[in-house]
Image (cartoon, rainbow over all chains, first blue to last red):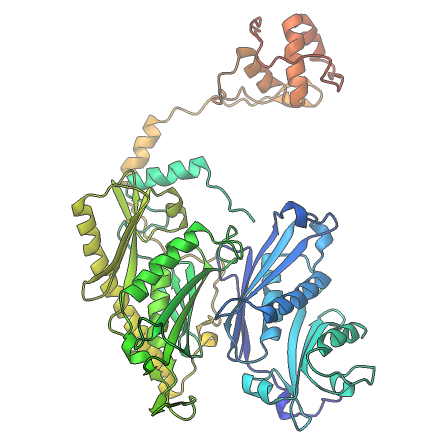
Length: 214
Length: 414
């Protein structure tokens, strides 16, 4: 996709990060993108209960906690996406029969939450000293009604957009590790090879499969 | 994940230190840790740090039908969550005793003390009232969850702004923040909990225990008070018997601490309000330290150096003179050498021979040590020969019964 021209929406909000701020977890990091802020706390490699232990590698568990209320189905599906991303990057075979727990707490949500979670988790994994095959980052982009791409959208921009896509990209080969979409957009806009339009929330599964084919 | 157990020597050390009126972080018995309050971008969001204990508080509101027996009052709902990141022992979805205890204390402190005017939350009597929900998340557990959570709760409530409403007959219009400025809650007073940990059946008391001190304490006394010296909640747990004047003393200390903390809270709230009004930058992005080293950093702690020289001299005079230094190692067999004789093993009542075996046969495995001991009971001379050659024994232990403490052992002389 040609986004080389300096479109107004292609800049990221100012972001910052702090590592090692909690004393109890093995690794911790907070990532702030504009007004969105996520705190990641990690424990691992640690003991794992008998039924869940895996002799091939570490068992990764992700817990995403919203600020208000109890975690619901949306959090569960995000946890699964995050878990698959971490498993792709973690060298889990170095720590068989152990568990690695990643707890993400939303401190404030002003758009691009999933990307902020991915970034906070990556910095947390680094702080915990866990072996990774590459770093990864999360980026959210929104397709607004005019067809422009906005990177790192705010909550208002996400609401007004007709599609919001989040990508997890690794640092070694700039490959897409995971993607999720909300809303409908054509395949060209999403940068996918197959020209089939992806629509609605049911497109999440299709997008993940197609995205992994990149 | 399991919580790491506290070792006995750590427990003894902590209790001994408390007996000598010393705390691990150098505080005095009645000292609080530093309280740091930071606010998020939205109203009603704050993070409170009490030393290393960190609590996130968020207040939100919703229009709901009121409770049938209180038709003209709003509802205040508090919920504290022990996040799994706060300590390795906290597991998601498990209703532990600690969680229930802390939740009940916070509920009593905030709700039963009537710190918010719930009558002002009524919109349409009997039909619509505001439900104010306080969500507290413990992010890091370094002791004294109750105090940190109570501070976070009251700060979040003071910081929160609810949408403005207007009622025309039966029609209720809720204005968005752009249409009309949100309205703060009406707070009567600010109740703050102060915890006291008791040790040795109430003999020693510490204010604001940290995580290690909490593990060895006998009992806990929590007093929730506001700056007008009114006790909102008082709870003593752990089954320790407290004297009346002890409780009175604690409440006097609480009054002093609450006054200090309330002042700190007011200052923090004023600062944040000023920043927002003047259009300055606020939120969590500003509370991240910039160009500063934060890792492996400790606050300076005062160290008492009175009588240091006298104490050092005392220790030196009482200590035994250093033992003879053996310059030359004794070579028993190739691969087994010995330097010095070592001190006596204080672990248990070992037999004389076992002691000597332990000192000499360092290079050999423990099974062989026991086996040698066994063969030694039969024939001492064989032992002396075997010392020159490496000892090869069969792996199977079922053939012989290995006696760990043989009754009659000929005393071996070096």
